[in-house]
Image (cartoon, rainbow, N blue to C red; front, side, top):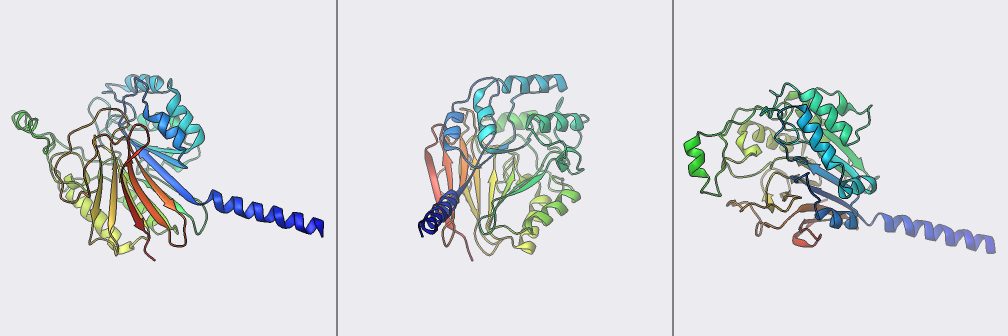
Length: 343
C-alpha cells in the first residue's frame, strides 16, 4: 500500500513537471549588430533564456573585400561572452544578410566566393557537417520543428541571398535627394527580380505542409513593407506575389512572420491572404543604433526605435495564445500583441 502511494506521488510529480515544462515556448530573434564591441542586449537575452534564438543576418558589420576580412570579423565576434553563452543555453539558428554574405560588393547570386562564405558561416554557427545546409543548392534555408504534438513550433528560415538578383542603387543625385527623406531608401525596385529560386520555393512548399501547431516563417528582410527604396520583398514584386499565392494555396495553420533589417521594431498586420490575419514582427537592431521609422499604413501601433529584439511566445492553453512583442536592451516589452490561434 505504501509502495503504491509512493508510486502515485512520483507519477503525479512527473506529470506535473512535464506539464509545467510545456506551458510556453519562446522564439526570440534579432539582427544587425556591431561585432567589434560588447552588446548589452545579450545580458537580457541570456536572462530571458528563450528556447530558440534566431540571428536574422548582419551579425558582423564588415564591408569585406575578401575572405580574410570576413574571417577576421568572426574572430572578433567570438571574443564576446554574450553570444557564446546564448549559443550554449538556447537552440540558436542563423541566416545571413548583406553584411555577412557579400564579398567586394557582390551581395547576391553574383558573389563568386559564396561557397567559401557558406562554409565559414555554417561552421561558425555550428551547423553539423552532415546537415543539408552544407551542400543544398538553394542556399542555407533551414526548417526545424521544436516540441511534440500538440505543442509543436516550426521555425522556417529563408535564404534571400544565395539566388538573389542584387538590387541596383538609384543615381547619385537621386540618392542625395533621398538622404533628406527618411521615407525613401537608396535602391531601385526590381519587379521581376529573383530572391529564392525555384528549388527553394519547392522546399518552402514542402515545409509549410509539415504538421505543426505554430509556424514562424523568417526572412532577413521584411516580407511586407512599403515600396520605398529600402530592401524588402516589396522591391521584388514577382517574388512577393509568389509568396502570397503559395500561402493562399497551402493555407498553413498558425503562421506568423518574423523579419529583421530595420533599425526600429514594428508589428504589421496583413489581411486577405490567409483565412486569419497574418502578422509580421520586425525585431529592430541588436546594436544600439536605430533609424527613424518610415510611414507605413499596415503598421499596428507605433514603430519602436528602442526595440532591440523580437519575441514570439506560445502559451500552451486549451486554446493556444501567441504573444508577439518588441523588447528593449533590458528585455522589457515595448509593444505587445496577443493572438488566439484559430481552430
